[in-house]
Image (tube, rainbow, N blue to C red):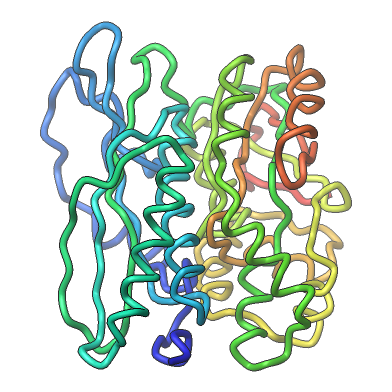
Length: 341
């Protein structure tokens, strides 16, 4: 059974566009609670609730249709992606619940392998799966609800970036393009293997490194693409970002595929949401497309105090797939929020 053939969209490419999501949430009031440190009104990666002076809960949920035909690999990728939101908030995942939808025709062994992939990745993160919920559906879907812990004074949000901060990124871009091409048998085995390796690499090491330094803001780059998440960081922080395109690591084959016009539908949704805030300069169109490309289990985007940036970058280079210094945060001058150089 080829799981990807059962799905209209793959992985985070199935995510509702940020612009549409904002409209759906418009007018829904967040109940006021002094212990709710981060709610859905912040467009952040997870919610944070203060339990005591020393403990806050980080909660998130994420699931999607298959992005790989192998059920074990699909389970690993979905779990990696769900855990990432807790890491982006500076937290440590502790408890997880399975969320699963499966067709009645899906073989028992395939379902078992899917769940085993999720379990293995959660245990690698040092967390536990304690239950969950499953339903029947014509299109398979899998993910996790994740609860983590963080100190209330050390919560990282996407809205704390400051002028002068250095922007670091921990994985290359192009996963969405490669997985889209793979569904059409147009991606090479090497590119597919690289994308799968990236999608199953936890952001745990990146999180463990960054919490030692003065990181003012963080978000994981997933369904809204680098530019979508960068725009949210710029808007939430009241700043503007300068991204140096030549310093951003792009999967080489993804560049060629994008130049051929092989692009996921999510890229167009991300462009429609963010391009009004982006000054693309003379950046080649195919590279713009990759900056809008929806990533599944992408890396962390950090806004780091300039005095700590070099030391953090050195440490990240020892433990993440691709540590990149991709730009700077500037004081907002009005107009566009993100500038490609």
